[in-house]
Amino acid sequence: MNTDINFLISKIKKNKLRNPKISYTSFLVNKGEKYCLNKIKEECLELVFSAKSNKKKKIIHESADLIYHLLVLLELKRVSFFKVIKELKRRTKFSGIIEKKNRKNVRRK
Image (tube, rainbow, N blue to C red; front, side, top):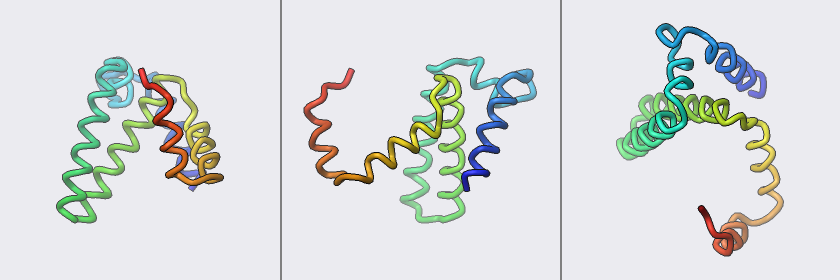
């Protein structure tokens, strides 16, 4: 699994430097943050609708789209996917319910 995600991240890093007319990754990166954020919203909604339809192939397809767009956004923002995984691992040390309750005390921007 780790090798697979490394491959995808590496591919995104390489493709972002390609011609945006032939690389969708490069196209997204060149469009910028706002465009990438809107793509993530779009893919989230498509995944929600797919999940409601209960069609596994569609759920897999839309999940892949969402993960890809997330990885592109992380690359654009120079945030390591592995730091995200590290954060998820950190959270396994305590109850998600308690963690969410504690987050309510922190104001979001």
